[in-house]
Image (cartoon, rainbow, N blue to C red):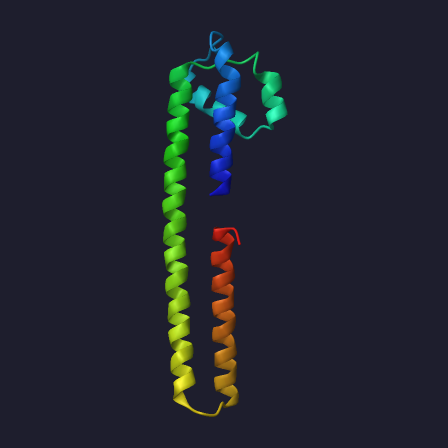
Length: 138
């Protein structure tokens, strides 16, 4: 999610830097596809390099808008994918908690097998929670 946000910010800054020089348009045989790939390459470049390139490269406003829309669609798709993954992790955590609860109610004393199963469930819950925190930025 952060990477998509960074790319969106980078493209907006790129557009702001390139906008004054929009009169110079690149000439290619497949302008739409080539422009999209050029804009995609610009998004990944450092800001200092973009500042240096600002005067020498220009894109039509339509090309920039199309690229911004594409980035927006990619951002939304990634957001939905992450939400699905979070939902799946939450479900797995809930299922592991229920298994642990059943194990706790089964007997008042632990056998070696029960202790190992309990330890395994706790490790599984820990790993799932850790994986979920990765998405949340924690």
